[in-house]
Image 1 (spheres, one colour):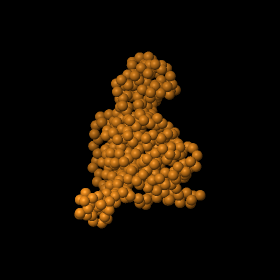
Image 2 (cartoon, helix red, strand yellow):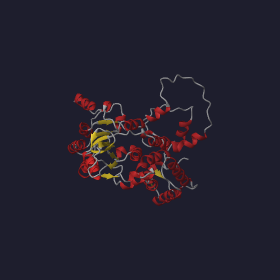
Image 3 (tube, one colour):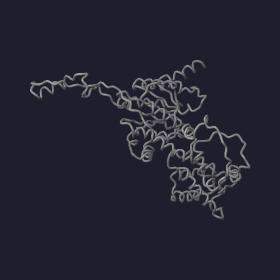
Image 4 (cartoon, helix red, strand yellow):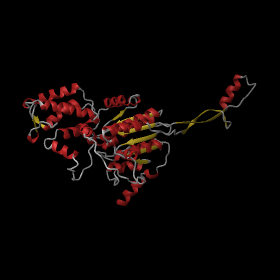
Length: 420
């Protein structure tokens, strides 16, 4: 299944491939993308062959652009396509490297870099069939003491979303659908009728007496009304967050299904309200509607400007009755931080609890050195990681508890002062 590439990155068009193998390779490449999770049908593969015939002799970049324009229909599919293209259309030594990867006699002793986003899904799609066809190897029975080892489910819960394969992402989505959310309540200034003889309701008592002509006065009682507070989500969909966007949207869809008032906003360079799209029962349909509504997916980011727009247009509508705000971003602001600090302070004062979810906390040696991070930290109540199932389940379990503990942002602020 080696691609018919020329030397120096020049792609040989179908007219130059006498045996027609180049068109077959495009067909195999389309099947690989389908296994990796992209929505690729027979029509798209035929269009890709016609597109390659139209561009003729060209560079590798032009060939990549032609296939990208045909096969990629969703923003989140770009990393998977790029990795699949890099693995499939490698210009030299592809067969030898695949044999070396699967041969126990030729282990790869080179230092391995961290997998790129989408690489696991592309590799599974390329090599999955070969692994299935390999005869089972007889492994010797080895007895180990598993008392101090980590179970497979625990390893899966701690696995980074960006490094998951297609099957692992599907399992993660099923796990997110089974999350149990707390029934958190906040006290309001309103009252509701009660059968507990604690607080007399004068107005209800007088209305009942008037119905009887005042001959019989029976006391009525009331108690303070408690409601589930609104949950407002501000999620960053810029290029630096692209490998996590899809799984985060599934998590937000679960929140929308299991809570009454969830307001979801996506932002990159502009703010988009997708609360209505998130109310669809089918998560895939909800994701597609969100992708159609957002115009700046996987682009730049302007956190300060988007927070200013939210505070000006939406804060009074959705931040009442003890609202909790989830801010999902890496804090890598590309503009000045004065506006960002001002708008973060305003947002913090408008809600009951502001939780910042940052995927950069997956690194053990994380240091808040970026200007945007330093401007935002003083104005949040909790600073949490959000890169695997364990972090999302912990967040879901503690939505109703205002106990920062190990997520207190003051720990990082003190570290900044000590470093200064």
